[in-house]
Length: 132
Image (cartoon, rainbow, N blue to C red):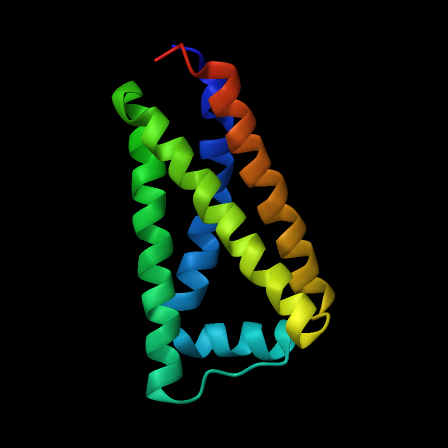
């Protein structure tokens, strides 16, 4: 198996697990992180529920990406989902930039990372499309 084709998936797993856990496992800790870095505090049950749902979504995607790393039969689906996930997040953020104005540098940096990882996944699909 060509290990290089898994690099975008591995990178996403490593990056997204702590983000997902920060969103969902400990709302009080997440509140502190968001208050410090993003000028935002999730202080109602509804807001915390949204962050826990996002956490579940992120961890579900990580599960698919991990499956694609471990089982070549799922590599294509995992890599397509990575591209859609990252480029979809980036598209939503870019729309927000246009409609709402520029956010903090944290979100701008996250958008750049999402674009790079999404493009890397697309490139990996093109490069390794016949290696499955």
